[in-house]
Image (cartoon, rainbow, N blue to C red; front, side, top):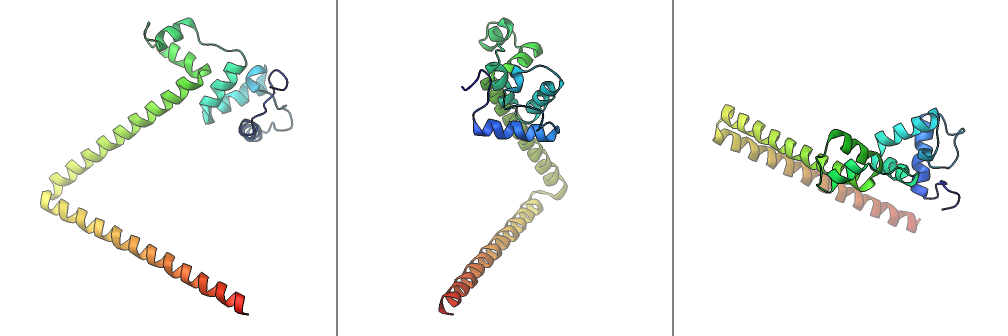
Length: 172
């Protein structure tokens, strides 16, 4: 890495620029890892990074020398309880932990949404009766299929129009 904390990855530079612009600091900061800096601007940039891309924020902290506490590492390896403090410590400087935690959150949210969908379905079945509910689902599926067919036909028509226009442009 050129310089001790200089950012060279184009995606990281782009992200730092975007958060610098969002905090109106683009003309005040250098192209350095904000986790390696002290002060209000660096703190503000890292707060934005934590919000928008917590995995990258953890990577920057790790590059700046931050390491997890022994309690956090013990919890990560199953030798101690994963407390809120240990989890926060790992989220602050362990990019892999952040990515795994985000994936687990996403899976949990998907599971919750699926459970809610099942509850809604059960309520609708109770209210409408199974036969009416199934009939409504078939009508909705048929309407969605008809709409999809119309969209496909529209796209095909548009392709034909464009082909005719291109052919006209070549002949004139």
